[in-house]
Length: 237
Image (cartoon, rainbow, N blue to C red):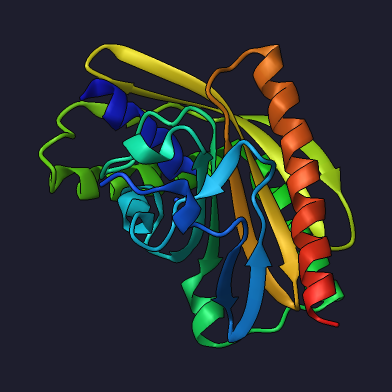
């Protein structure tokens, strides 16, 4: 139970067994009124499918909408609600406000968004307020499951920019969550992507806070961002 809570808390800081053959390699979805394709980061991961995406509802802040979720292929048959225990996994989300308005994101506006994110994470007080607000929302959700009597999210530690291009920006964070005297720390990455003039958020959750996890998160973030942009560039032709 503690591990479930800690996993959900770490996810929040950023949002029956089925045969793997039921799930396509890519996740096809809609973002702001346009179709987009979200491929898995590599062959070790699979998209959970529409039947199990709701298992991640406790990990996604209400301001966002979950588009796709990727977990290790060998874990999918054991995935239960609420989602927990995956170790390494990925979520892709979209702002509900931008989605409802079909907001187009130009190159110039994407640059402004990236600048705003950099400024936010350079200000520890702003960052901590954001984390505290998200923590309170997730705690409220978990109270519905009667699992959240003593949980908290620690102050995040920014680890800096991983990479930046004209259509993508990624940064890493060290996040920690505590419950029942146990604390879990993991390195996560957030990726902002401009896909078909829409802004989407891709999150990569590592399983530990060591150097190997940082290297894996950094490599996976850049590889995945390139694959998403390439897949949608091809589908637009």
